[in-house]
Image (cartoon, rainbow, N blue to C red; front, side, top):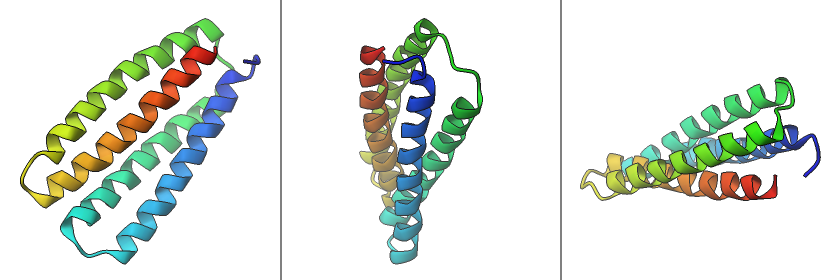
Length: 122
């Protein structure tokens, strides 16, 4: 991977965030069901957080590759926690918690593979 790995990762995360935000806005506009409104709302929240992280990474100095790799491995570990929390919420009986849980689990799953693949490439 080139010396601009951090910038490339930030751009890819921003793309994911924008796709999720567009989906969330469309989903919130189209549904009135509690489960789907919670799902799309949480997807939008994650999109905004991912966009902020990507923007910060984009504007910051290019990180040292060893430090970037370490950060990606730490994030991959945190992503497993997000997946577990999401699945735990998804198993709850309330539709709102189920929607939040599914959105968190999907984001955690995507971010796990995103972080893992990038860490292995560096």
